[in-house]
Amino acid sequence: MPDDKELFDTRSSSKMLANRIPMTAATDEAVLEMQSAAVDGEVLQKKPFGFLFWFALSFVGIVLFSAVLANVLPLQNPNFGHFTDLNQGPSSAHLLGTDDLGRDILARLVFGARVSLIVGFLGVAIGLVFGGSAGLVSGYRGGRLDIALNAFSFIILAFPAIVAVIAIVTFWGASLFHITIILGIATIPLMYRVIRASSLAFAQRDFVVAAKTMGATNTRIVLREILPNVIPVMVTFSLITVAGLIVIEGTLAFLGLSVALPTPSWGNLINEGSSNGLLSINPLIMLWPAMAMFTLLWSINLIGDRLRQRFDLREGVL
Amino acid sequence: MGKYLIRRFLQLLVVSFVISVLVFMLVHLLPGDPTTQILGANDTAANRAILLKQLGLNLPLWHQYTIWLSAAFHGNLGTSYLNHESVTHILATGAPVTIELIIISQVLAFAVAIPLALVVSRKPNRAFDNVSTTTTFGLLALPPFVVAPILVAVFAVGLGWFPATGYTPFTQAPITNIHEMILPSVAITAGSIAVYFRLLRSDLISTLQQDFITMARSKGLSNRRIMWRHAFRPSSFSLLAAAGINIGSLIAGTFVVELLFALPGIGYALVQAVFQRDYLVVQGISLVVAIAFVVIQFIVDFVFTIVDPRVVRE
Image 1 (cartoon, rainbow over the protein chains, first blue to last red):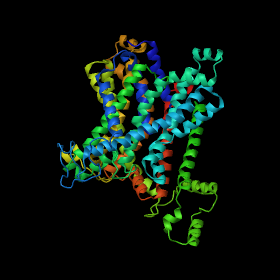
Image 2 (image 1 turned 90 degrees about the vertical axis):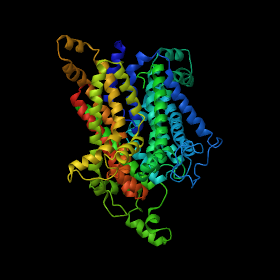
Image 3 (image 1 turned 180 degrees about the vertical axis):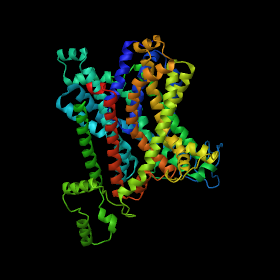
Image 4 (image 1 turned 120 degrees about the vertical axis):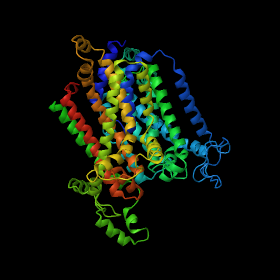
């Protein structure tokens, strides 16, 4: 049975929605998700992580591992066409089959994972380093700097991310580097807001006041008192944002606005396989990367969700 | 309430101003000379200077911005340098398609999410609830560019129930139009269903614990009446807010399905313009879509303050 605290939290959830912090396109769903799912937290908190969690974690692990070691692994050349083996189904020579140009789908999938993972993780890292540190300091110190940064992040987040990214990519050129930088920058205000809110909440707690009266420096308070408490929020939110960035990169790649062919990425693999002719001849070309994308996003979401339950995070903190 | 709305309106103005500056800067700050684009790399410097003057690109940046902005206010966002179609015209022909997609997908999402949440929240953590919750959690991992090709493969190529591409205006043949719009709309619905269902479910579960529900039950009101009038109504506000926030990812979704199903919407026009390096079209569409996004958020807030006065007190 939920207690009063939980009811209170749910009400504040709708209030927070009412107040609405505009978010970028990809992550706002995730945030809503976190807000709405917060009620479940109480009930499930003490449960073990469960089989699905470990499954998801190992899937992400395998994808990461194979993407990093793609050059070393016994994979075929992802861009080499075996012109005698076009559109083959799975076989011992090609575990996932070949595409319409006779290229090994498994190899293309593994190399394509690199793009998604680099954009997702590096983008969030950029957001964390700049937005996270700004949020920590701004939430702790308050004052004019806080007001200014907060207003600024508000304005940036009002911009629909996908439109901004498409426009910038048009003028700057589509490459892995550019997209990672753009999405990283787009993540900064998001991370800033979430971590600022969390930092603000902890800055008023007794242990911070105690540290101050003991004469701790501001740097020490931020790094030793506030940061460790903010980390659960940071990790959970980062994971969900990684999934969000992977979706944006996939969307761009599907539209042909990410890395140029023949370099594979999951988005452009799905796009390549979705031309009407190919869908009837060999739907597997589209299906493999689509399934990989689904499983990866699902796994990251699930890990994030279970960690949030474990840390018992509430939307008040986020 | 007035004060709150005025503050939100000022915010809207500031954001719109920043958007216009950013979109304007896109063309002007990034490398690349438009005269080279138009005249080619081998033309003389004199010709280049003349064109620069004709295009007004020799003026100071702030002056160019004011000219651009005042033209935009008069509905002139420039013309495509490829087919000389005005950006306003491109937007006017594309908007109905995109808006129709969004409306159908949202109607579908609410039609699935609301009844499901109402049923499930009465008996949470039972088998049916677990199945629905797990399924919708999976839906969150299905962005349009993953779902849409699968839908095409199954329902258009495999079963042949729906056309894979093509667009007929609603005014010409409403039934054909809806038939063609179903697959693309379903493709962008998945995420919305998940978001609305999960939000409404947890909202309802906690609302149903409250005293006024017990009160309603002890008055002997029917279950249906309690669910709709007492439990659903307070939650419908957060649902509305969620829909407002959701617009952002829906826009991205429409771009994907418009490209895949060859629907002549705004996203299709934008992507084509990007490929053809049709800068003014990209600039114009970005500006209008971004402003529309911000205005929709404002309208949702506006409606919110009317239906739920608690917002203002915050």
